[in-house]
Structure formats: structure tokens, C-alpha cells
Amino acid sequence: MIPEDSQYQVLELIRDKSDLTQREMAQKLGLTLGKTHYSLKALVEAGWIRAERFARSENKSGYIYVLTPTGVAERLSLAARLLARKREEFDKLSDEIRALEGRLDQDGRS
Figure 1: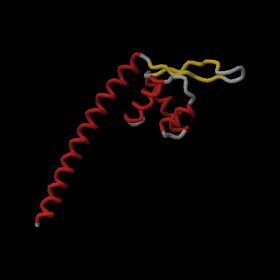
Figure 2 (figure 1 turned 45 degrees about the vertical axis):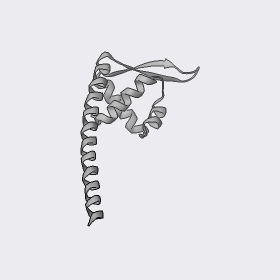
Figure 3 (figure 1 turned 60 degrees about the horizontal axis):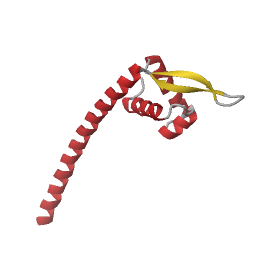
């Protein structure tokens, strides 16, 4: 499966703007078109989103991506896990910054 960060980003993008093409999604996510296609396919297979066909113009057709109820719940769960992980990273960085500042202060006094 795709990394949780990517899962969350795709689900958020679909929540905000479900009628984007895969190419537009790839651009907004900073992913390759292939990785975006793979991510969408994985999320469809997981049941978190569904792809519905719609006519984009007279001679083209495309998909609109819709979060399923499971996808909505999973998006919230992913957000909570990502927030907890980012807080932990922030706390570790804050500790490192304080330690470096302390060393600089000590070295400045020596």
C-alpha cells in the first residue's frame, strides 16, 4: 500500500476537489502520474474512494473520485495518526534545538 502521508494527501485532495484529472492531481500532489494512478487504484481497491465516470466534454470522458463512508472515517484516522507523529517529531526537534542552544551558550561563555 502507499505511505500514510500520501494516502492522506490524496484523500484530502479528493475531499476538496473530486473532479480533478489524474494529471491535475499528480501536479497538485507533486507525484508522478504513474504514482498517482497507483495511489488512486489502491484507494479504490481498499474501498476508501470510488471512481464514477462522467462526461467532461463531447468527445472525452473522465472520472470523478468520491470518498466513501469508509474513506471519510479512514481520512480522519490518518489525520489523527499523522498529527500524533508530527507532534512527536516536533517535540524531538524542540529538544534538539534546546540542546544545541545550550551548547552554544556554554561555548560562548568559555
